[in-house]
Amino acid sequence: MIDYSVLYKNELSARDNWPADVRWDIFVSAYTAAERVRTVYEKATASEKHWLVFPEYGFSADEYPNGAFAPPIRNEAEYVKTFWERCIGDVSGRSICIDITGFIRPYLIFLLRWLAEQKVERFDALYSEPDIYSKREQTRFSDELVVEVRQIAGFEGIHSTDTSNDYLIIGAGYDHQLIAQVAENKEFSRKVQIFGLPSLRADMYQENVLRAFRAEEAVGRNTTDESSSFFAPANDPFVTASILREVVGRINARKPITNLYLSPLATKPQVLGFAVYFLTEQRNCPTSLIFPMCEAYNPETTTGVSRVLKYTVELPML
Figure 1 (cartoon, helix red, strand yellow):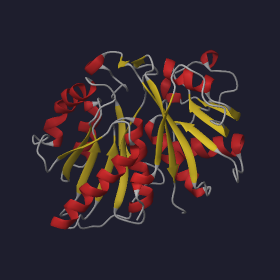
Figure 2 (cartoon, rainbow, N blue to C red):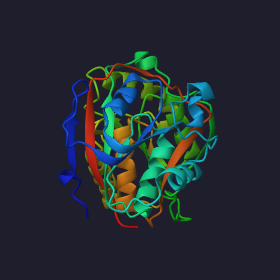
Figure 3 (cartoon, one colour):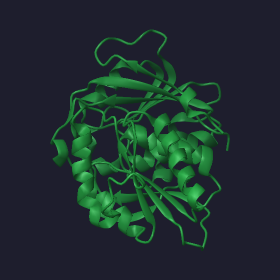
Figure 4 (tube, rainbow, N blue to C red):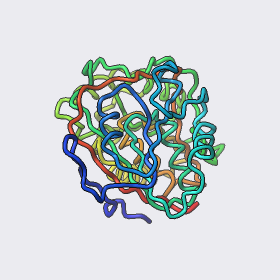
């Protein structure tokens, strides 16, 4: 069983140049209008750098950065596979860095599965923290018009027909409508939420909870009960994975879970933690990562950049 505590995290400057030894063969970033995404792309040193433009952000062709990969593909598996085959190819012996900041969550989650299938044992992930969310607790990250709630490609579980002790664990973010949609989709599952604490900034935890409470009718009213609410740092995927292990272990100790559903709706580092946990501990189990798919996402939700975090992620051999 992997010890998540030994995985490596450090900080890079948001303003000064990075050390000369911070470089990679391949650097991939998702293009948005955010200053923090563009800043990291400019600072990163790599033999080849790639911009991904997701159609959900709604950019017009004349807004694309030069050389961007921007097909009108809205399926995470098809998009990532097409990009990799056209632009990357064999990665044997090549170092990889993914800036996860601008990624739409299902694409990021499938990318981890794809990297593992390509026998990538280790890669670096960057995440740039914002100074603030532009509209504080009123910030909308998507249009909140959910097309469907479904399993993410590559993270589909082998589910049991016994549903007597099904659980849904939600990484609770600001989009309360998405929380509600996922909870309603698994109406008869018991619900657990994981909140980001410590949060990215001091006031963001309160903003997060204020938004999450708006979904309490769908999730349940005991959102602060110790058996249904847990906490993991908003900027640490490895602690998030450890908390998921702890939560699932506690539940199973009382009564084995029949089917487990994980829905990471919070920060990208927590999303990374959910995906790593699934790949290392929940493959070939009655467990799925599910997500409320939206038509559109806001390409700019933040102001400024406070710091850049670098995670060294180890993947299991599939």
